[in-house]
Amino acid sequence: MQPRDRLVVALDVSTRNDVLRLLDQLHDAAGVFKIGLQAFTALGPSIVREVVARGERVFLDLKIHDIPNTASHAIHEVASLGASMTTVHASGGESMLRACAHDSVLVLGVTVLTSLDDASLQSVGFTDNAIDTAARLARLAQASGLRGVVASPHEIAAIREACGSDFVILTPGIRPSGADAGDQRRTMTPREAISAGADYIVVGRPITNAANPRSAALRVIDDMSSRA
Ligand code: C5P
Image (cartoon, rainbow, N blue to C red):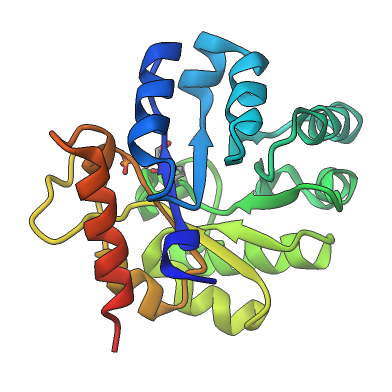
């Protein structure tokens, strides 16, 4: 994969105009566009079809967590929209994960949300720390037929060791050096995340809120390319 193919830009906006403006600015400066709960709830499935029709790869980040039958039908609908990637919560359990493993879309298991620290994990009943929990959930996702996971950059090494080099790891929580961290906690730069073993990095506001989103995306790609 070229560095550009590894960059996933999060289109966390609520209007069709904002989606199309960002696509115009970024169409050859990112490999994948992420449509998450904000844009999907505001704009519906038609926005996915429209971005796919422009020839872009779409990551439809729905973080599905439901009974196996419902989850599996939702994944089929995601595939029929033409999305290339989507997400389910690995904590949904083996039966749900097996029902969601699908060939025509890359289904990634969400391990531990980057917004949860060790104390919040304990308060919802997890006894291990974030790194061990993420590695355990990644192993469960792999054993249940998924080809990859979403994890914080700080969990990449443990997941690589647990799941091997072919397992896909996509990581948010990326901040170019000097960028505002916003509500992200334990961040890494693009180069650090790729060096740590990420296949894809997700970058949202540092690109979409920049005065010139295209230049900001090209800087992220440059930073990834400059790894030793
Ligand atoms: O704007 P920012 O770069 O923080 O955007 C990161 C994107 O990655 C957002 O769409 C957010 O929902 C998503 N994400 C995350 N942490 C997770 C899972 C998804 O930041 N654990």
